Structure formats: C-alpha cells, structure tokens
Length: 463
Image (cartoon, rainbow, N blue to C red; front, side):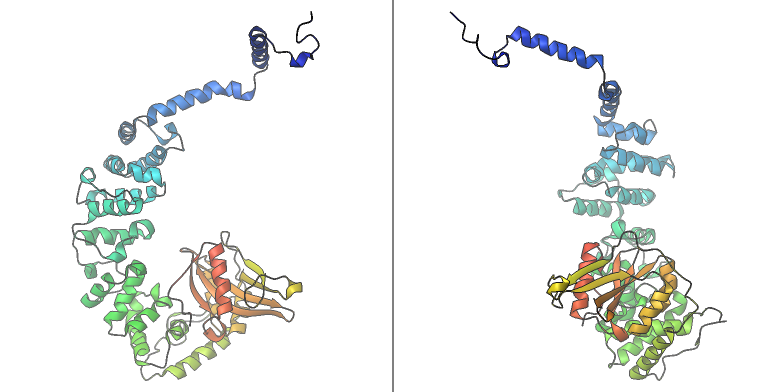
C-alpha cells in the first residue's frame, strides 16, 4: 500500500526536524565562509556601543568626570544629551576650572531641559559665564512645573534675581544679546537701570521707569526707545509710531538731542500720521548725519526742527526721493541672494484665487533686489528712498524685496519690503510714495513670510 505522500511533489513533502536543522547549519556555514562588511565591523561596533553605555549609565557620575577632565565629548555618543553637556563643560573650561565645575553643577539641575531640547545648551552656556554672580546655589533650585520654558525661566530667576525683573527682560537669555544678559544680572542684584554706563543713550529717571514697565512683547531695545519717547511727554501713539522708524534700532547718544526735537515735532504736528514718520526720519538722518560719497560732510549738518510744518517737510521728503532716482555713486555695488530666503512666484486672480493664465490668472512675485542699480530703479518707480539702503544690503545687514504683478505691459510694483537679516523680521513695507501697501500686496507678503518662516514686525503700518 502506498504512503500518503508517495505521489506528492518533493517540495510539498514535510521534512523532519533533523533535516531542517541540517539545512539551517549549512546556510550558516555558507554565510560564515564569505563574511560581509557588517560581520567584519560588528565586533568594533559592539565594543564602541558597550564603551558608550558605560558612560551614559550613570549621568551624574559622568558629569562629575567631565568636570574633572577625565572624560571628553569624543568619549560619548553624539545622539546623547550628555554629548551636548560635555561640549558645554569643555567650553566653560576655557574660562577656568571653576567655570567648568559650575557648568556641571548647573547641568545636574537642568539635565532634563537639555535632554528635551538641545538648544537649551546655548542658554546654559550663557548662564554659566555669569556663575560668579549667582545669588543662589543651583542645588537649592526647586520647581513643580514640568513645562520646559517655564522651568528654564524659573531656574534663571533662582540664580540671578534678588528682586523680580520687568517682563521685557523675560527672553534675554534665549533671544537677547550678551549686553542685555549683563543688564539682567545687574538689575537682579537691585542696581539702578538708568545708571548703567553702557546704555545706548542717556535716560532720565522717568524714561527708565517707563522703559522697564513697557509691554513684554517689545523686547529690551524697543522698550528703551518706547520709554525714551514717552519720557519726552509725547502721546503714546507718537511713541508707538517712532518704533516703526530707524530710531527703534539706531539712536546714537551723540544724535539723541536732535531726535528729541523730531519726536516733539511729531507730537506737535497733528497733520502727520505715524506712517509718515519713517520716511521723514530717513530724510532727516541723511541730511544731517550722512556724508555722501566724495563730499566733505553731510548736506545740512545744522538742520533744525524749529518753525517747520508737516506738509512742507513732506514735500521736501518727496523731492529728495526724486533726486535719489538719479544717484550714481553706488551703482557698482552688488550682493548675493539670501541663501535661506526664497523668492515667491504664484499664479492667482486679483482676488487671490489660484488660477492658470488660460483661466485669467496673473503672475505675482516677491523677489530680492541684488544690486544698487535695481534699488535705484525701484526707488525711482516707487518714489521712495530705498536706494540709500545699498550699502546696508552689501554689508549683509538687510535685504530688499520687491512685490510685483507681472502683466503683458511689464511688471507693476505693488510694494517694497525691508528684511532684517539677523532677526529674520520684516521691518518695513511701503507702496509708491511711501504709502501703505494695499490688501493684495499684504496677502503676498504674508504668504512669502509664512513660507520662509519670517516674522513681520507689528509696528509696520497697515492702514
């Protein structure tokens, strides 16, 4: 009698366990006969992994060894938060052993923050540089919150604040400058703000108080200008309008008396609107303080605001803009396109609905101007002073962008935009004759800013 599987194909006949084991051994033997790159490198990889695990198994012990110099960043896996801690301690050691030990003590309290967000390393490094000015020991820090940013702010307040600090100083450790951080430390000890030697311009007692009580969203620099303007006795609307001009970021102490006159003129001249302040300030700055190429000094170094009227001054500004369209001294300047900011090109209807040319769509662009000749052409067409920004563009401090509608008759300029390169913030947007851009231009500017992760200053007039 035939067995059940006598007529079945060989591939369908079940094998015994002994045959399966023999086949598996043959496959393993064949694999060992021709070792691949993974098999060759496996022992080295296993050894490196075991070495790294020995140092990451006990973080507190590793931090102590890093502070003593017994370990270095190269001994730790780059994906571990301890690697970021090691680089922080090594940087601190350049300032001395005491600084490295302070960094290790701080990291014992901030290890969770660094593990959750490696960008905290830069903040902790700045805090460590001021370790001799800590008013409390980091080991005494206690906080119930698990929110990372709030816990970081609480740790900094524990280390530096004998007295609560104003809200405008809240973010100086994450987005401020070393000078602002030094001010934070001194204010935390209770020193008088107006007596700081490195203020950009002198402050009265009232100005200092108004600056320190300014809204938190202003930040330190703009809060100083805001308090300075309010301290002159002007209306709050005028003080806010000043923050939309170059005075918000550029107010040298030697020029400050003249600009006091200007701000009081704005307050007195009710026919002017805040969107007029920017062009007027640019014009006055160029006339009184800027020496043109080939000249011995500024055009009008004794210019005064006495007996001036708003409409007449606006006519001077417009005539100056017209003259700027004929300047030649800067035509040789050129610069590279911003590597991290892309142009915008879209096909839409006038109402902002996506559409192809056959469907009535128009091409809209936001494009960077890359040489002085393009700035001169933009300024001539728009009747504003963008040509004077050529040297700042060439130095990489700002970039200028043109918002255009491309039609059959050629491009139509809708607005000109100034971008602060360092802060990635749009700080000016103007249409022809320094008017406020229209709704269509603003829609394009906002889309371009959103796609490039750029912020727009809240002080830009929008009508």
